[in-house]
View 1: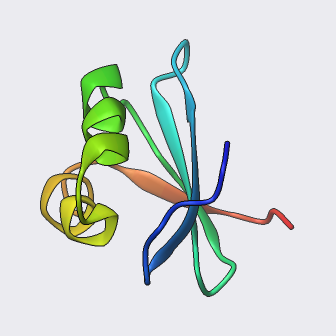
View 2: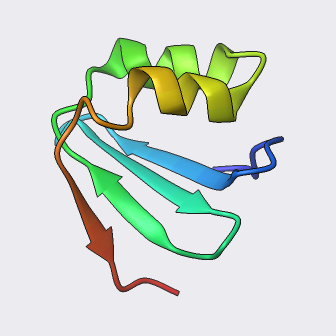
Length: 70
């Protein structure tokens, strides 16, 4: 997945079968957000401000795990 134009988010990936959204922040840390609907991922990609969308529509709404990923 290409890099994201955001001050907070560097990259996102999505596994549709697992409904998992992977987010790499500009700090380099990766998180997996669980049971995220495909529409939410599509809306994230289309959002004018990816960081704002993430804050309002993802963070705090979905369970997550921090990943040990390069």
